Length: 211
Image (tube, rainbow, N blue to C red; front, side, top):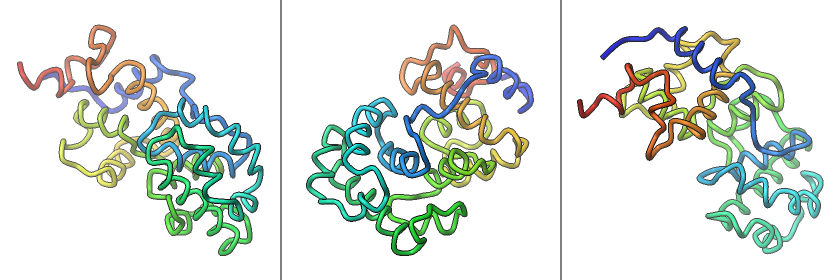
């Protein structure tokens, strides 16, 4: 199998998806954070279908914290695990109002202390809401990292995050996160990847594992 430098991989991703960005619809930090929590194990498109009505009914973090749980569940009921997600976003809202005076914090420790917020969500919130260099590892980023040999197949998301941050310049963390998501979402699918359009076939572990 051929080798490709990290710089070459980043250059190819830039050529493929120069305008990669967060596809969760939002108008402020509150909406961004809630949308990220809702996006666990579902698509951004599915989240975008439920958030307009959710945010119309609960336009502020305080209103969500004080809202009726059953009504929140009803508004997001088309999402998988909607009851758990309703509990998470309301718990998040209550945590913000009770512990942080209604202001979403920007540091990892504070963010991950809140319901529904793991490292992936916290990284996205840091990057999108506060412009902090971050590299969230979701299923797309993990899959692409494994296929391109940027980590080992059995590495956990946290280990993958640490390895990617060592290999990729800090100023490119946030953009690379979005470009890898776009690459996984629109080209290198989990099933039936479009290898004919891919510039990485010579170094892809998935492509070459059965050769």
